[in-house]
Image 1 (cartoon, helix red, strand yellow):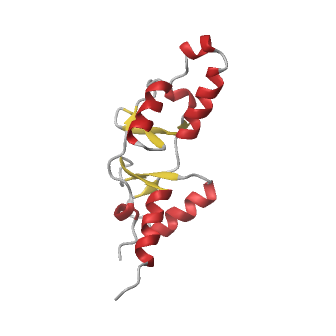
Image 2: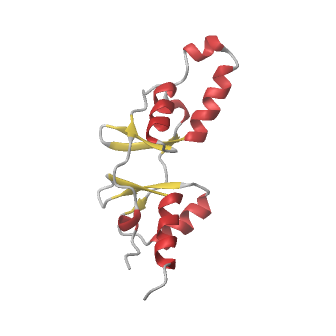
Image 3: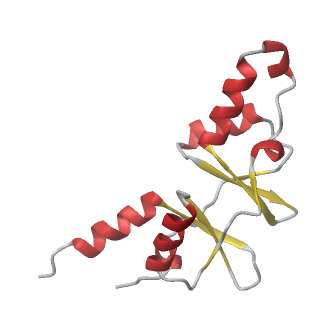
Amino acid sequence: MHDLVSDWMTHKVIAVSASTSIEEAASLMQQRRIRRLAVIDADVLVGILSLGDVRAAMASASADTAEFAHAPRVGSIMTPDPITIPLTASVALAAQTMLQVKVSGLPVVDVDGRLCGLLSESDLFRYIVEISKPTT
């Protein structure tokens, strides 16, 4: 059984830039049916944007339609410098970290700090289901 983050993470991370509009980010999340986006600047992870972040920003902007025309960009509502986990970390350590810092996903990085994937709650659920299967 493979118990490393690299074995269970989502490899194809959808990313946007900090200058992406909130509407574009929301549309991308809806189209791809995802709850978080990596925010990248020159191939470096600079933040993470959650669906909750987008919903909160859109709700506050919708109270004033004039303000929504000048809606903030992703960079103004993202979580900067997100906590990451290395490719070689165990799934158990990732789950423990997610519980401690109260996040539903962790960007996965290599030894050089480059983004390689994302480990989400859904990935952890897949792992639990797999290890819970009876052996024959």
